[in-house]
Length: 230
Image (tube, rainbow, N blue to C red; front, side, top):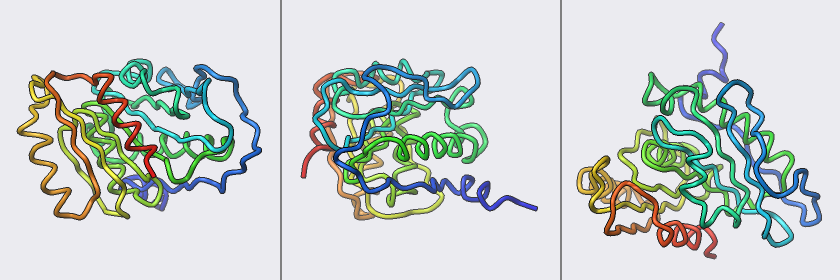
């Protein structure tokens, strides 16, 4: 008999929601890097901020690019990492599941990681973002469009495409992309995506910059301001 949960994951659904935040909730881990606890050789990381104000934390799920890993994904957003609780999953394969056969295995792992984090940490339900770089940005956009009931924001750095199996809600979208990107051409990727997203009614801003396949500090800081805005 088919498992309904497997069907949900194949449809890109992440079936978890944050609990109401308790301002006085204790933080279960000290500041710094910790294993995400998914097991296996590609475990992922949890980055606990050191300078966060008391109360619920913004949360960013940051997804690496093709052949990347959690540590490289963290370096992409290093200038803003101390402003949020950062969940850094590793893909099972060289890239994310939709690029290696279809949604399912990585969705399940991301859901499991979020279920644990959201149960243990005081998280701001109005600032829960999925972010990514390159293939991770494409995957982040896709996850946001399919799971707008969970993710309030998406921060997509150099995305190539979006491939939702379903649509849910209207998360706010930030797209940053270098106009001289030699890997994912700006004109063929972000410039084509933006009109489609706007026609579909998604609130979004786009920040193009003179540069290549990278996340300049200014773009990361602008993305954080987008997440933190009222």
